[in-house]
Length: 516
Image 1 (cartoon, helix red, strand yellow):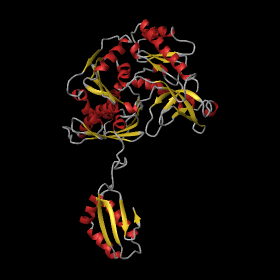
Image 2 (spheres, helix red, strand yellow):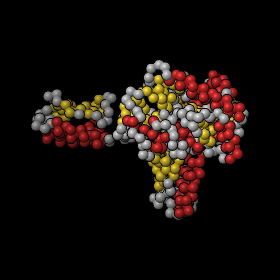
Image 3 (tube, one colour):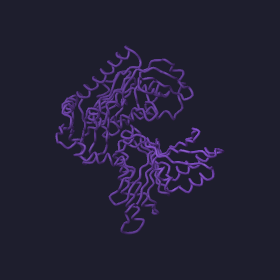
Image 4 (cartoon, helix red, strand yellow):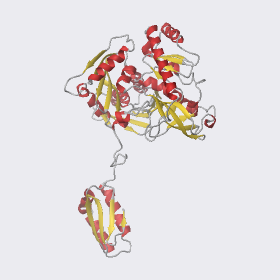
C-alpha cells in the first residue's frame, strides 16, 4: 500500500495527515496553546483521596486535576496478563492502548484501598494516559512508559513484550534475545512492530538512549517545586514520524523548511529499514488543498455524508454514544428491493469505516442499517464491516447484526474526535441542535403577558423580543394581541430588539414590573 505523511505547519498550529492511496486516512491536529499531554510525565501532588471511588485527584499543573484509579497507583506486578502488554505496538494508536491498559482493571475488584497507598499532599510521579476530555481531567497512571522508534522502555516493571503484529516466531525469539541483554532486574521493554528486521546495534543504541532519559528524569524529579513537568512528548511533527512511519510510507512532505531539516536529523537517530524521502512543499497552493485534505475535513464535520450511489449516512455524536443511520436517499436500484438495500448497506459500510477512522470517533457506536430480510445479505454486510475495520489501528469490537438491522460496536477512544477538536458548542442553541419555533415563542410571550397583567387594568405593556418574533406577532398573531388587550383593558406593544436571542423576551408593564 502506498502512503505519505503530509505535514502542514503554521505559527500556531500543526496538522498531520496520513494519506493512503491518495486519500486522508487519519488526521492529527496540535495547537500551540492547547498541546496534547498524553505521554507526558509529571511529579504531581495528591490533592484529594476518594475512598468511595477508589481513586484520587492529583494536581499536575494543568487546569483540572488528573484522575488516578487505585489499581493504577499500585506496583505493576500481576498486571502482565490483564493489561495486554504482549500485544502492544506502540504507534499513536497502539501506544495509547499501552497507556490505557491499566484502565481495563477499573472493572476489576480493587486489590487494596486507595487510602492505604495515597495520602493528601503526597508527591507522586505519574504519566498521562488520556487527554482531558470535556469536563473531565486527564487520566493518570503510575505505570510509566518512555517510547522510542523501535522500543518502549518500562522503567518500573520487569517485562519483555513483543508486538503481536510480528508473526514470524524466529524473528520474535531473535528480538526477545536481543532485548533481554539490556533489561535490568526492575525494568523492561516493549518491542514495536517496526523493530522487525532491525539489527542488534540499532536496538542497543535506542535502549541506552531511553534508559538515559529515565535516569535524567529521576534526577529532575528530586529537585524543584511540585507540580512539575518531568518529560514532555515530542511535538506532533516528530511524533507522527516516530509513530506513523511504516514500510508503506515512502514520502514525508512538509510545507515548513525548518521541519525538513528537523525530520531528516530525527530519522538519522535511528536506522530505517527502507528509504524515506523528506520533501519540502513549495507550491503557492496550500498543501492540504493540493492533496484534497481540506475537502475531506469539511466533509468530516458534516452530519450527513452522501454516498456515490445517492444514498447517505447520518452521524450523530453524543459524549459516549454515536448513532449512524443509513438511508437510501436518491438511490432506487435496478432490481429487487432486497438487492437495492443490500447494495446501499455495503456501500455505507466502506464509508462508515472510513469516517470512524477519519473523525476518530470512539466509545459506543450504533449503526442502523436499512432492514434486510435475507440472512445471507445480513452476514455479507456484517462481514464487510469487519473487513473494512481491519485497517483501523484503534481497537474495535462488533456485536452481530440484529433483526432490526442494528449493529452495536465499540471503538477505543484514543483522543478527542476531529469534531471535538475543530468545533465548539453552538452559543445560540446551547448544543441542543434546535431552537423553539416562532409560533412556540409567540405563544409563550402571550401567556407570560397574561400572567403579568393579572388584576392590572389599563396598563401599557411593552414586550421586548427578537425582531423576527416581533414581526411574527404583528403579522400572524394580531387577533390574539387584540383579544389580550380587550380582555385586560390594556395596550400591548411588541418591541423589536437587536441582539436578542429568539427565545428571550421581557414583559415590561407601565409600573416597571418585569417578567422574562
